[in-house]
Image 1 (cartoon, rainbow, N blue to C red):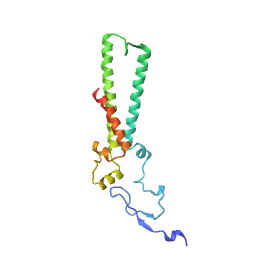
Image 2 (cartoon, one colour; image 1 turned 90 degrees about the vertical axis):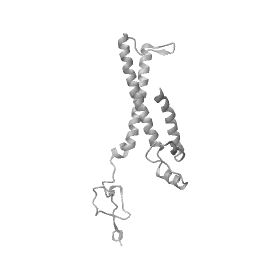
Image 3 (cartoon, rainbow, N blue to C red; image 1 turned 135 degrees about the vertical axis):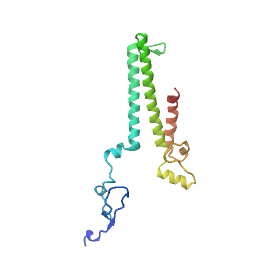
Image 4 (tube, rainbow, N blue to C red; image 1 turned 120 degrees about the horizontal axis):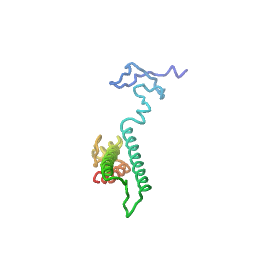
Length: 179
């Protein structure tokens, strides 16, 4: 007898909020990647650049660009003007030109440090959120964890490496915020 004679058709569970047809059927034991309903398949953009992943990748790119800008400016100023008595010169020009450059450089520094602080905050929020497994484990112990918001109280109930990332980011972000 053939396997096809014994396949059973069962109703597919559908999301009530999707546009998928409600009468779709799949065969038991024969669900392949291509058989996943269209409303459940993720595009490349959704899978790798969606939601939190997109935000975190954007902040990694911003942090790298800030690092490149700082090192480039430092290298340019050091090569052009040098360092004397532990102080570097950024530019030699008329007082009004230097004053204007000073204003714009402080503006740029504030924008870049705000972007770095925002990115650090986004990473801390993402890493302090517990996984489903961590929430279940906390519930078994009679504890609770905050889901969806940044909480230092979660550090006791999440993976140690995630807690370490949050602490390192918190300690490294303080100088940006204060200085």
